[in-house]
Image (cartoon, rainbow over all chains, first blue to last red):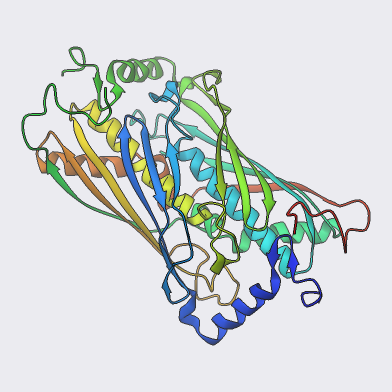
Length: 205
Length: 205
């Protein structure tokens, strides 16, 4: 093992990684995390998520110094004005990002130096499902393909094993392939006043 | 129906919406879409997806005039440098965005004017799964909670029905709750030269 002599590998400090693993083994409740996102509708297919607070390692995080923002939209053919990637494309991003980070972390732990990790994702969808035109099609992608290009300082068989291991440990790969229970609750209320015509419309339309 | 007298509702042109539905009914292969994302690793937990081309409505899209970009990262406690929302947070965004857009489209089709749509999402995770420390925990979220706040020009029961309908028709809600088959392929290659020490590291580390 070389983590002592060269702790930072692939941009990951493996001495911190191994210390983190040891700390969780000693105190398993450090492993409880809660991630969050808030979303606000901005009109039509345009909405925006903001992401900052999370709980983990036994406390509310206080280290993030800024809020992240991701806009969503739809292209014209799906009735939007291209204000951002559409939600299905955002899901492809989440999947690509998680497989990549998992791969990089696994490689770092195993002493493999990576020089290139790229991926291209495709998802196939028949929108008759989501549009409610046919029950023969699901709402989401029928299938997703992920194609990786990976270069690293190890034999191909070892690099291939990293790809396999990334699939077995990726949080988003797990969720996208196996599904997650989602509970939707909410408060709904009728707008005050008569907004049927000439109302204040947050879309500006 | 009021779509003739007031076609743009909630920022959605319902005359275009109904024409699109009619066109797909006449020519079902217009419903075939393929969405895509490309991701490149930038070092450590930092990677970036770019999103632009897609296929749909019988052709490669030529209407999008710009490429979208989403960065991913991890907070310090998960060995990153906060270069972006983490992949699990990005998945929450995708889910929030899709439920919101679906709700807005359904409301528009049904003649309901919305004045507010906000949501807050939480996902619970025990990272012993993804870290490979315990087989008792899955890699991804155990559960996700979505809480909506919705105001619109309709009775509460009708607004609640829109929320229910959004769940039944959202592409990402379908994928996250039911799962999607994901096929991972790739080409791996050993870097040329001896990169074991002192190699060119794309992370700059």
